[in-house]
Amino acid sequence: MRSTTSWRRCSTAAPGLAQRIGALKSGAPAYRPEREIEILRRITKNPGVLPAERVAAVFREVISACRGLEEAIRVSYLGPEGTFSEEAVRKHFGRAVEGQAVGLGR
Image (spheres, rainbow, N blue to C red):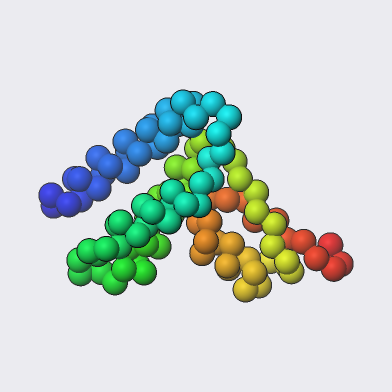
């Protein structure tokens, strides 16, 4: 119960903080891969009961959602929707980015 309350508190505070941070950045890019890697490494150092890759996946989505509040991001990938290229975009950037399929026949 305690962790659920903590998670709720965190999940409602993070978006507001992300919007304020975005305003403070004033023109700096919302996507900073080196910073995101640093955060994920620190979080997965001692993941607890869950495997590190699952903890990273959850936090990657939180980061993606918060990044999306700062700035809408579009990522192009080769091939039609549903390909491994699209899945790689989702795995790396999270589901909050807009994926744009490009390639032959489009």
